[in-house]
Image (cartoon, rainbow, N blue to C red):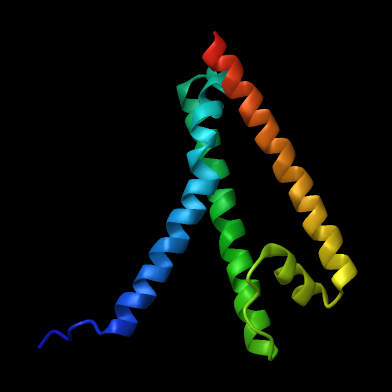
Length: 126
């Protein structure tokens, strides 16, 4: 007899699917507009190898962050962090360190966003 999925199973699957789509959209989605032109000079094989390597790097980074969050939740009585800054605060056990990590992450992401927007504008203009 095949068991039927209950509401908890469907809810858990929905959460995993939602998180997976969010990660995929953030790491792969927007870069697909900019990266083909950026690696156009190296050829299809080298560019594809670069894309696959970067995708695996992002995938492993996501798994490591998830593992640290799970271990942090299991080893302490704190709630699951709701943001990257909360995650850094709890992991570093210092609000100042969390603020510094959050600010550095915001700066880096802003630089990538600015580069992507300017490069996409250049592609559209040409």
